Length: 117
Image 1 (cartoon, rainbow, N blue to C red):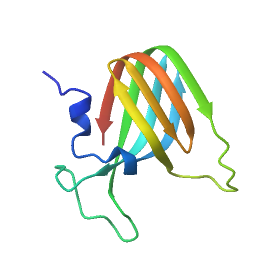
Image 2: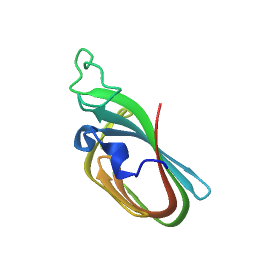
Image 3: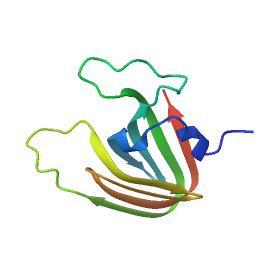
């Protein structure tokens, strides 16, 4: 049996993790993330120079979306921002809510998968 969604975030500091990209395809939504790993995580490595976390790339994939609300914020920056800080993050059953510098994401999906590279 696979791990629960909540257990996939064991030893991951979501508050320090960042969003890299939002990709929409048909009834799927993919969030490319840089997860901030805590020292107890099996993939943890000492942070690089100038980094406050051990960032590890990953994705949240949502399929069979029945409700989707994206509210994109104006970042106000001249250049392209590469990482967006997360303010709030919640997965409960088939519902997902996140507020971050990129904007607000609210959805309900048949499938929510956590993938790490």
